[in-house]
Image 1 (cartoon, each protein chain N blue to C red):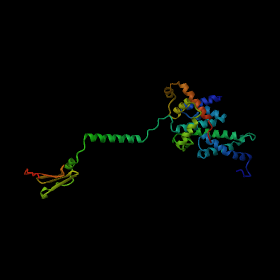
Image 2: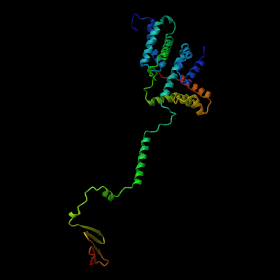
Image 3: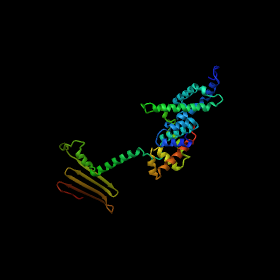
Image 4: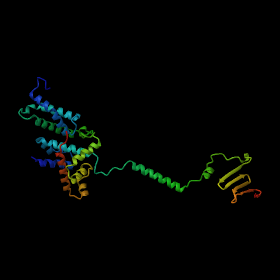
Length: 164
Length: 167
């Protein structure tokens, strides 16, 4: 007949071998003779089942699911940056030439044009007039003595100018 | 049953034992008292006790006799299941009683059951039963002889077995 110590040794041996102690003949025989040990063994088995199905406190903390997403986003950003450096952005003018959004104007339909730019400062006014074959700049500044200084520069295809 | 005028004294005594017997059977099976497995086993225990009632001496305590019968029923059911061909691996009787408990509650249970263990017992127990590392692996990782690992495991299990489970 085995002793209680032998009974628990048999239980340990079965558990060490990852077998169910209740399948062991000596364990079953002992329990039938000593039912008081049945509950202790049942409690041990229940505790071990709880342990086996619970989260593992020894396991390294799981990486967040955000990590792979953040890594993918970082890779995408790096790829975009690389592409940007390898292929610098074109200027708006270049883009317009490559991808015109309006049809080229028919120059024959333009009869005449003039561009006037006026710059006003505390000391005076400057007016620039540009038209086909002609550029005129008019300065209208106050002179140091309070006299009005007025000058016009006209440049045209005829290379003429007339100071006033 | 109790009010039946045809009942024998043993009937009445057995009826009074049923709640405790149900809890005992459920604990042996590792299932809830409301589990169908506990109910099936309880019915079998009562049927077997009634069949062998002639062997019961009236002057003896009924509780231990019924619990002994319950243990035989549980072991017999276990043996019958082991002998049966394993057509289906899943067995509801093997589902832990607290399988449906949420993870937080389960963690608390594990923490409370590990309290009486020493740090080395805790580590060895968790490595073996939770991480499923072998005794040899644990011995190698912790630089301990395998015999020492087995001793720590045994002591840890003994403490778990002595721990009173809430019914």
